[in-house]
Length: 381
Ligand code: SF4
Image (tube, rainbow, N blue to C red; front, side):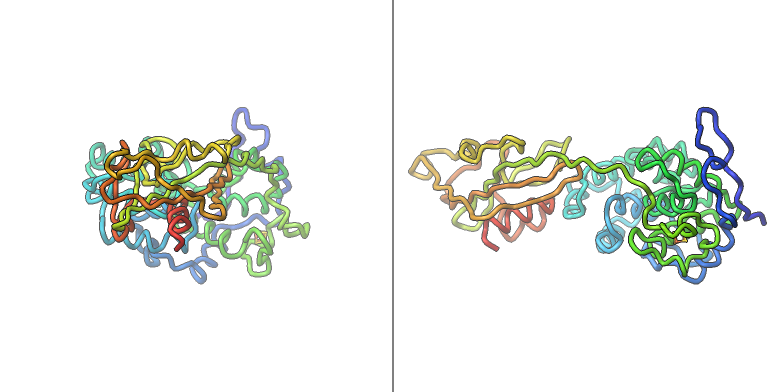
């Protein structure tokens, strides 16, 4: 069994091979990390028992859900998805709308659309069996380099090292990588490829993830408990927390807009479905205007939903501005919405593209968390 670390090969065009980074005095050994993992591995719902091979469907489902999302937030969604769609064929056979509803509240909704598209592709192209090859995995919808490597390593024991944010941090500290992220991704990826355990590759990948998640944490890493502390340059320098270096983030400009919570007097709410592509694509929302950096609050009611004038017996709906603002932060911009609410007569027809939904049925809708906040605000809940 050869668990020794191989130095990454110098690649054409890569001027920052491992040799150009400060070298740990003792090379971090996969065997030490695996021994630590055998004692301290996290118990995760999608993880196979020790010595067992993971189901590729479960690995894939969990990895897609975990993108930009915490383990705690993902766990109940994962359990519900698995109970309802226990394998990739079941998920592929489900209507997209049902998958989006199941995903509602987990955020980054393009993942749900890709999840469904990927399930369909696995059934159509691979007979319902996830391929084991990284390239074939990457060709599937929604599967990028990291997820392909994670499935290949964890489900098929391929000798690859998936590099997520946790692993990036561990590698950047081991070698004190001075290049800031995101530019350092390529160097870190190459350094990670230097660890090519010939045995237990899936366990090694998960051990690295666990090390980053539980010991080599962003703040106050527990270096005294780390199986690799003897071979860590950043720790030896006493500046573990300073790595990985980061390029200061440029905040997206604040966008603002208005949302309209129209409630029928018999307890129905006006909802509509967003276009399938783009931000919150295919999700349910209350009517809103465009969200812009130069939103003029004084003009907000120009975009309020219009109802037919004769059914209610009067032309104008009495919109009232609900005090306060609903704030939300997307990855690339923060958003502030003012909310208008109105009581609408029961005989009012919904405007084109919108529909009335009973209040006690809105939990079934694919409402993103932003819209849940807006509705709660508009209804004074
Ligand atoms: S010694 Fe500390 S900084 Fe280095 S890898 Fe271990 S936990 Fe991270």
